[in-house]
Amino acid sequence: GESVGLHLPTLSVQEGDNSIINCAYSNSASDYFIWYKQESGKGPQFIIDIRSNMDKRQGQRVTVLLNKTVKHLSLQIAATQPGDSAVYFCAENIRGGYQKVTFGTGTKLQVIP
Amino acid sequence: DGGITQSPKYLFRKEGQNVTLSCEQNLNHDAMYWYRQDPGQGLRLIYYSQIVNDFQKGDIAEGYSVSREKKESFPLTVTSAQKNPTAFYLCASRRQAHQPQHFGDGTRLSIL
Image 1: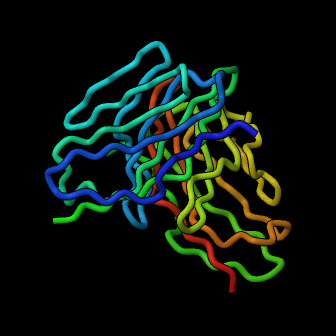
Image 2 (image 1 turned 60 degrees about the vertical axis):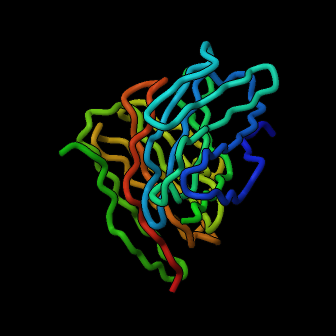
């Protein structure tokens, strides 16, 4: 079935380097995408979002890129800090009458001091 | 402060018992969601509700039931038909489509 998935289950980066977390989606009816950060034992926190009519969106130290041609989404974190260590999820909103949102498997980001 | 409150934080179920997880929000959001998260995995959608007195099955609804009698509340019942209920359960809400969800801090359900 159609689903959201991630390429890398674990990503280790040196403090101060940039991080790139990738996500592949296959549902062509998705029109809105969201990145969340989840720390251990807590609920996911919103990071950044993007609509399907955009290719790029920037926030504070984070950038989301959307490539609809290959159905690929990425989250870039600039100058990665120890506090960025967490699991990151992408989620997709499927266009339609009901607000169904599905999540990918997640990528664990480990920041090495 | 506005937010989503899930209770209890930890819950234990005996064999053959139904248990209900509470989710309350004071964000005035229309849509509410229940997800299940297993260790090292993503979130799987159980049920979602776009409006009061209406809800839809998600991808793994079997063994679960919900109600949406009030805008603020979306309780989830884990029935005895759910044979593997041990998981972390997350509730979320959002105002409308094309906006991010707000999540509670979850309920961890275990089997005695």
